[in-house]
Length: 65
Image (cartoon, helix red, strand yellow):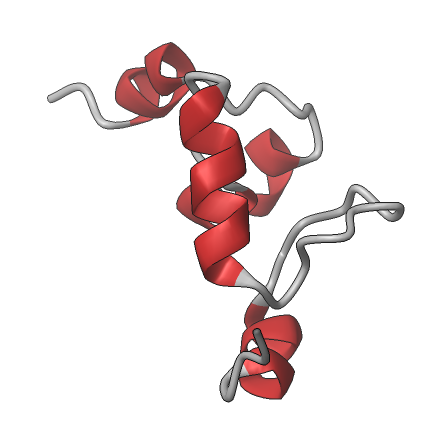
C-alpha cells in the first residue's frame, strides 16, 4: 500500500537509525515499536533519540512533573 504522506513524513522523521525501512511510513513505525514495547523516535528529543532507548519508561521519565 502506498502512503500519500510519505514525502512529508520522511522530511519530519527524526530517526537516526539509518537502515530503517519504516522511515516515512508512520503506521508501520508505530506498529513495529508498539510490538516491542517502545515508542518511535518522533516522541523523543534529539539527544534522547540518539541513545536508541525508545522505551516507554524513558519517555515517561522525560515527562515527570
